[in-house]
Length: 356
Ligand code: SF4
Ligand code: SF4
View 1 (cartoon, rainbow, N blue to C red):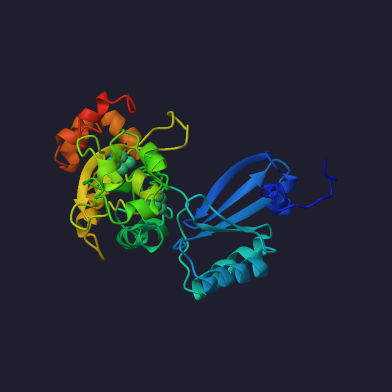
View 2: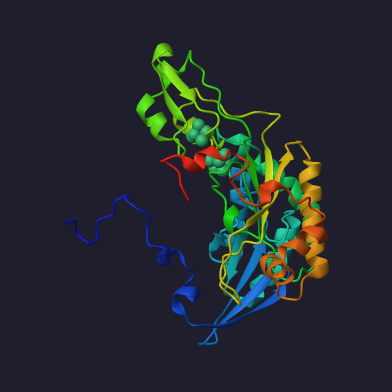
């Protein structure tokens, strides 16, 4: 067994060593918190100690210059302590009240945008998109940029009935928090992958590619020393493409964006909820994605108009009912809403590999 003092690079270090001293001292003994400004809140401990959090937006895919700026500010005003929230907001944790205002002024001078605390939208958690990931059906950074441009006032000043958490995932692998966000966008493919028989024998391992398909749609094609796809069983998940790059699935015309709403993680008032489908497909129309932004705007405006104070999007929908939600938002109700999967194909429900 290794000596207790031995340091290895296996596993992350314990998070507690990175907490500011005031948080370590008052760990799990906080009495209340108060939102002072859209980007600033204070937590008060049972001991009377206080810690101020100053939140600013980040583009998530960030440059080294941005990281240097953030570290400079943290060194200057909060002994180097800051954190990225789960939705990639940057939060500076200040234990000295006299440093809060100078910190806010400094951030303003550097052109940073503060906000996102309280009944507002916060930064958008998102995935890699066209910049990094091979299976993207839409772009994450581009969509996030246009959504935040549209709703920036709800980050910096304006209030909503409650928090609205956005998320974007660029395919149904969903590396973002799409399944549990108030309003979430998810990239969807709508065509089966097309096998590239010239490359499959050289690039792909046949058994693991066959095993990667959740619906059992892939089988060997011995004549071509390749693979074949049973298109009727394919639900366009793109899993096989992650394993075998010679099964490309991206399609500029048929790929697009689905919108799901009503999810939340908190168990405050009501149990956590999964998001549910409201738009099965909208076109990829970069760089501004007008169809997607208009759709999100319609949902948010209906929520602002109809929700009671403190109601999250899902709670509002539960109160008024889905029928009324579709009426208020004027979203066409289509067969895809009846079951999230049936628009793929119905036959895969009958396979041995994939059953509900
Ligand atoms: S959501 Fe899909 S496309 Fe986006 S980063 Fe994750 S695996 Fe890649
Ligand atoms: S269901 Fe998914 S893994 Fe199977 S063939 Fe279709 S895209 Fe590939």
